[in-house]
Image 1 (cartoon, helix red, strand yellow):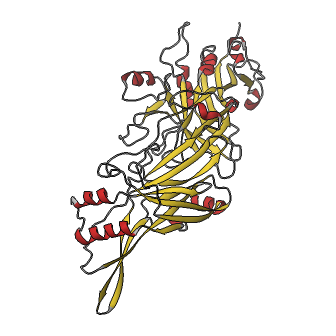
Image 2 (cartoon, helix red, strand yellow):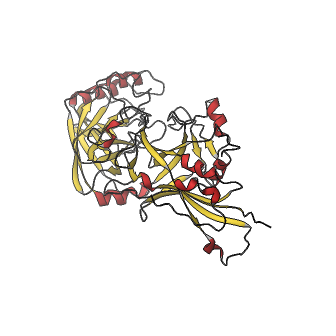
Image 3 (tube, rainbow, N blue to C red):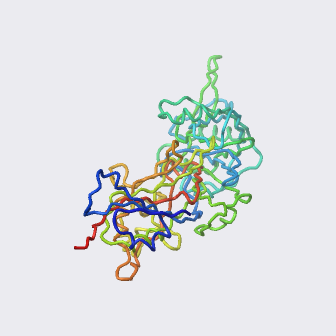
Length: 487
C-alpha cells in the first residue's frame, strides 16, 4: 500500500496513524494561503478492513411486505448456483353457490410476472413444472411465517408445465416503469381435473362467508401448488396479489338447450412464499457453512446477497487508530466509498445499502437488549421499532446526515457511472470521535463494527448480489483543528 501525507500544519501527531491511512492537504481549495492560519484543514482516507458472513434466512412470504414469489435458477461463479421454488396458496372468496346441475369443465392457473429478473442476459424461454402441495395445511401457510429456507412437502410428479419467453432488454425496461405503466406478461397452464373437481364440489356446497369454518376445510383439502424450475437460466418474479395471478374454475350450465360457460376465480394468498437455495460448494464462499461466522475470501472480494443473505462486516479499528492520535478535531465532511463494484449483464448489484451496527459476536445490536441500548447511546444511530413480521425489528441503523420523514438511514447509493456505492456519514463520524481513547483508556462502548446490509431492491423478495474488492472500501474524512503557534 502506498501511504503518503501532506498537511498545512504539523503532522507529528499523525505518525502512528500513517501506517493505516493517507492524508492530503486541501489548502488549494481555500484560496490564497494564510501565512498564519488558525485552522489546519486536512483530509484523511482510511481503508477499512472487512469480512463476509451469512445471516439467518429472511422471510420470503408476503405477510409483512407484499412483493414477489420467485421461480427459476441460474449459475453464478461468484456466489454459486441459485435456485428458487414458488409455493403458492390460493383462497376462496365469498361467492354464491354454483347452481345445481352445473358441470365441471377444467381448472386453470395464470401467473402475472413482475418483470423482476436475475441471471437472464439475453432472449430465452423459461420453463416450470407445477406440483400439488401435499404437506399439512391447516396451520401451514395460512397461519405461519415462511423464510427462504422453508419447505412444504409436494407431489414430485408434476400435474402441469408452463413457460414464458423473455428478453433481458424488455425485462429491464419494464421493471423500471411504474407498475401501472408496465405491460402484461403472463403464463398459463391447466391443472389436474382431480383438484378441479374438488374445488367445484366445495363451490357447490359452501359460500365461504366471513368467519365461516368452511374456509379452513377448503385450505385443508386444497393445499396449494409449487412452481419448480425445469429449464431455466434465470429467476423471475411473480406478482402475488395482482388480479391476473389466479386460479380459475371453469364450468357450464345448460338451460333451454343453451350452454352458458361460467368461471370462478381464486386469488393467490399473501402467505405464498419462495424457497431459495444457494449451492456455494464450487465457490470461495463454500466455507460459509454456519450463520454469523466471518470469512475473509482469499480472492480479496467482498459480497452482499439477498434471498440467501450475505453481508459484509466493516471493521472500524483503523478509524480509531486515526481518531486516537488527534485532538480538537471537527469533522467537516465524511464519506464512505465502496469502489470497484461489479455489474455484469443480468446480475445488477444492489441499488442501495444501509449500515447496521454489529456486535463482536456478529449479531446486530438490538434495541430490546439493555446492554445494546446503552452501548448505542453515544453513536449517531437510531432503532427501528418494527413488528414481529419486520426483518429489521429492533435493529439499529446509522443515521443519515439529513434524515427525512421517508429516509432516516444513511444509504449507500450505487452509481453505474463510477461503479461505486457511496454515502456521506459526517455526523456519524463526528459522533464516533467522541468515543476516542482518553488518557490512554479505550472507551469500552465504542462501536467497532458495521454491517453493510442491502435494502434496494428488497432483501425479502429478490436474489440480487453485489461484489466488490476489499481494498476499495475507504472512509474519507475532511476535518479541521486549531493550529498551535509558538509566540
